[in-house]
Amino acid sequence: MKKHLIRFACALLALTMLAAPASALTVDQALELLEDHFYFDIPEEAYEADSLDELFQRLGDPYTYYMDQEEYEEFLGSVEGDVDAVGIGTMIRFTQEGLLVDSVVSGGSAKEAGIQAGDLIVAVNGASCVPALDSHRELLVGEAGTSVTVTVLRDGQTRDYTLTRRVIHIPNTEITLMEGGVGYIDCNSFGSDTGAAFVQYLEEYEDQVDVWVVDLRNNVGGYTDSAMDMLEGVNGPGYYLYYEVNGGSMGAYDREGEPATGKPVIVLVNGESASASEAFSAGVRDTGRGIIIGSRTFGKGVGQNMLDEETVPEYFDGDGLKVTTARFYSAGGTTTDKIGVIPTLLVSDVYAEAVAAALCGGSPETSKLCVMPGNDPFYVDPEADSRVVAALLSALSPQMEVFYNDGSFRDCTVSEAADKLGVDYESRWFEDAADSLYAKAINAMGTYGLLNGTEPGVFDPEGQLTRAQLCVMLSRVINVTWNGPSRFSDVSQDAWYAGAVNAMAELGLVNGVGGGRFDPGKVLTQEEFLTILGRAARYLNFAIDDFGEAFELELVSLPVSRWLELEPYAGWARPNVAALAWGREYALGEERGDMLFAPLKDISPSAPVLREEAAAGMYAVLAGLGIIP
Image: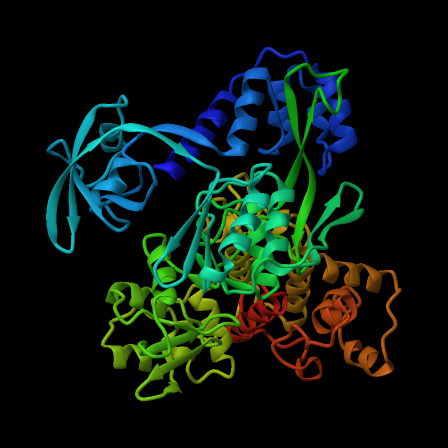
């Protein structure tokens, strides 16, 4: 139960932080340190705090807090990630059908008995586990040397296993060589030695492996340097992470070593993959070295430094202060803060590992289906369960190449592949988008769950878009909401769009219309839409933001023809419209196309924006920044 034990330890640690510890650090000392190191501005009310507990509550950053000596030691242990635990050696997930076995741990009695990932534990000592509850998990744990009987459902048949609980050492990072040339590296956290161990695995087993699978599910992060060492191992020299500190100064993590592998890489993630896990995943994505499978990651794109007796000996004696000091940006200059990493193949957590196995299990000689979600072809295991193949097909966007083997591999659509394979899959594409000029973009956004239709399967491409509707769309993309009082008098706190409107205003992506009002029902013009979309692009990517700032300061030299294209737009709109039109070219040094849904000269600033244009515009930004394919 490795990953669940790690999560439990982290949850326990979080709970201990809720109590105000007896501390040697004073409020004044904490404020002094925050003024020197804290990334965000310190709220005025924080200076009125009477205790550390009150200070950090008013600070509003969940990642900045004080730890007494005991808590600090426990925290450091959780980062290193090695665990000795008592149990049967299964990682489980609670489902309505029972305790789902996600994986089994080496050294545990479950693995020795033949229990497999995908098995359902439906009873423990004869007590039903359907539906699974936390109390059922408690039945599995106990003292070392004691026994427990589990009833396992597999392929429609049940079987009882009597297993002995034992102490299992769960290493931070572990490799398993699997059939079909798969090197499976399971990484619990990014400890100080994780990067070195990872690269050692790559070097030692490279000749025996055809594809590497890196499992970062439930990995909440750790040391950034370890993630950078891992990226060096799969990529070689390069800049893999940028950071911005308070005041706007930028820095970068770079590596100069040669890669330890050239084989394809698959990274498994879920909603608990955070921080350094996201830095590694985004680095793999941005460099095109592999694909990401699973659910959208946590969205922790800020980094912390530890202040303790080594760094500030005059203030600490065994205790420590964890402080958010920077916002991180991936190898492509894009933040993972809030938005997280959107997997190449967005797959339910239940099927993520099985989909990865299916992609690794075939060959050109045996497979009927080949897909290219990234730069490498993956031949699908012909023996893969139909439910797994259905999950894979649902995750394929229109931009991904699909081939079916009917004697030779030929191009086909996702639906054609499903028909030929006899697989019933759930399409995320919109039925009424087929005739739209922007069908591919609309359906790509649907594939990644970034668009809501007007009803299931229906998008209404030619419908007009209101200010509130755009906020709902963008809040879904950036993955934010707002739960506090409304910022606008005409946005009721219980309105369906209130959380989205207020979240977008909090990020500075939208403004009111004056008088404390937002005017949520007003239809957006193209000029207004492009301004908001440009702000979003600048929020997501620091290079695009640098271009926008340079434009505002009149430091950008554009050809006369481009100034003429901007002439119809109001002065307040021009910096963000220009960021969409030419930001990538100027900021990134490459003429790779703009991030608009149509040529700028063909867009009328005063015309209403249509839903299909908004979807295509958002897709152009996300794809242009490498966030989705």
